[in-house]
Image (cartoon, rainbow, N blue to C red; front, top):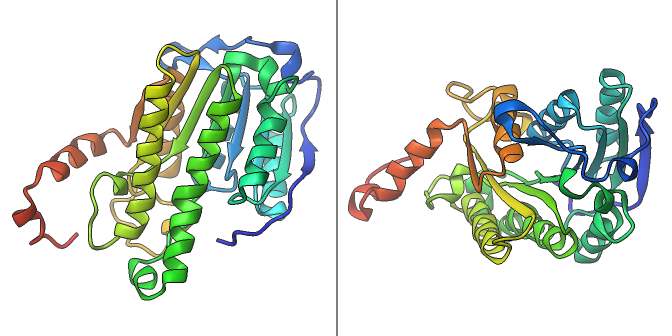
Length: 286
């Protein structure tokens, strides 16, 4: 994943009849067991397969605006066009941003959630999903500090900065970030990627502690192995369908659960993995 990009507003699709976030401040509604449904969603790393599916579900369920943020103008335009066809009454906009630049992160978050913005007007109806990352084979990362640095930066440091900026700027709503079950315990087969995800977990836990009693919720999402383009090189047996994973993520984020495992079975699996004594764990090859 390249760490370069340009910033600024991109294309808009499907603006048929909706007036935008500002006219619906705090107008979030209930959707059964899924908790509070957002009126406005912002998705960082919107070209991720999981992120795309989540965005689609939120718009399908009643969200009326979606801001898609990413590094690929072409990828964002493709998704925005598809969403515009599926949801012609929704306002879908795109923004091409350098996802790892601290200054770009600050400016972008201020733009969609700062004072006077549509996101600020949406209040509790705003949900931000931070979903970008890079998965490089462990052998490649081990062999090159440059490759390792890229994984740690794009997958760990950058998402952590995004959720920190959101916590500093938003006054209400939900911040969700994609961690991974890989962050639950370091394993020889993916410890550099896992370390990046473990950083996100520590950041999320700290923000949850900091924001206790606040109207701002922070959710850590831990997908298990999922069938996406990022995992296309892996054995496909046992990978969860992306649509099913996205459904569990959306339900958990809407409900404001502190941690969401998707699929849920991974909560039990990783609880067992974390408790395996080191002498036994070191004999395992997984």
